[in-house]
Image (cartoon, rainbow, N blue to C red):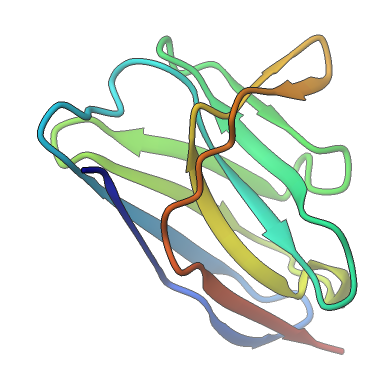
Length: 125
């Protein structure tokens, strides 16, 4: 059974920064391989892809966060990160990490398996 535990959310003012973490555990799971990513869902809106990283550590981002967010992974600890800078009120959402979440040619694909509870990010103006 795979467990994803997100943390690092909080309340910040616009322009601030946060680093989200996602601890991945499971008998046969390792973030070394495959695509992993982050999605978010704002109140009243559909879930949307934010960032993805593949087995070769190539990363892709939604246009709305390019240049502000950075996805990374620590394969020794099996932790996925999302460094968020220059936060905007529009970034307010529940953030989820996901297994099998990829991007190719600007299109998200994969099962986007979000087994965790998410972590809430609130950005005030």
